[in-house]
Length: 215
Length: 282
Image (cartoon, rainbow over all chains, first blue to last red; front, side):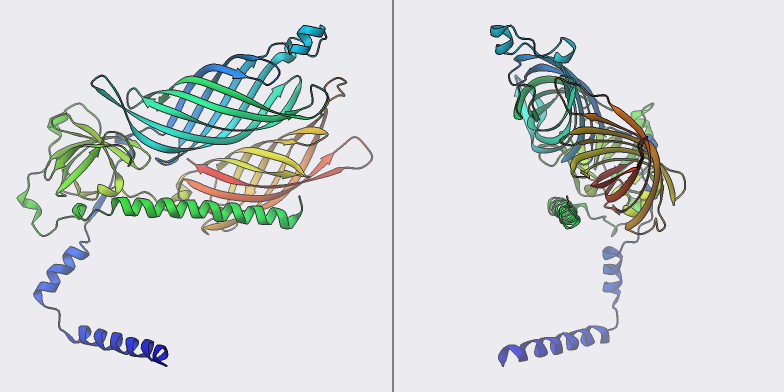
């Protein structure tokens, strides 16, 4: 019973309180407060033409990629990103590597792939999240850095076929200046191929160093 | 993939994206609801000197005077970076760069730092007007005619992704160039198309659209040793979908497209595409 009465009493009290406030004539003091609470300042839109916006990041990377069964090889690529907010970014990657012979090819002298087929090209679209923002200190200099994680999907062209590839990884963006960043990245590109006879999901680890410009 | 499955996936995506957006909004509010940046209007504006542009002659940017008690300057655009300098009330500042929601400012004695736009409500220009640094809301999406979208989904059961570049000619009509790749068990499809999109109600936050398109589809069987020929056909497509304006820059879209492939065989082939993803507007 008590719980049913409670809202009724509270609503009644609230109505009384409102009536009491409404009955008071506005004093000079309140008019000043109104100005503070609702300043109604006329504002001018900031002129975007006068302010350079730097949300795009474009750059190169190079490193090593281990293509499962086909050795660990040099990889080179391009990377471009659009920073949606301070936390999230959208990134596109393109990488090329030339794989080696598998051990079966070396030992048994069989030929699995031609030279052209050995080139592996991938592209991907990734979504990134800046997890840790902070600074690194070298000598007496402080550099801004951020550690990010990425995940995405794309396409791998290898052995005359194309494979749906998903990838995930993490990296560190080291700002040498506001507009120039050095990267170190570690990513895993996963796809399924049947070059060795049966379907096999392969994990291809890539570690790279990169350089990007913001504009 | 069956229809209910797809719908379930689409709903989940929408809920997730919405949750992330809400969480991000909430956190920004918590971090930046700093009472010290409230505009001080109790004193008359004439008491203060007006900022002059002479301090940084020849440089571009907006020249302003800080009217809040203080302004924290961060070393980089992000709430996790350290605050290295505090600008004082009535200090003259130059704004000259922007990254997302962060503006880079320079004080007269050469300190350069970043401040979030939510903390910049008390900047007065040399005409005595306060600056409006608010971000445009989703309604201003109409002023960004170029759209880039990334969608993922299914094409007759195969994993698919699409990249779409669109341009809006009028509020209702836009045109899109699409590239889609689908990875099936037996073959890989590549689809390039030119599409006309009609939005009957562009002012709705969740705006429906219909599409009509044509293009070329190439189908390449998956095989390692014996390589059958790649088949190429033209197709026409009709589709419908929904576009959700999250902000003026970001949107979420989901769509269904039915392609009729005009083959050289006796009957035409039909392909169904279900896709969802997000868009950036420029």
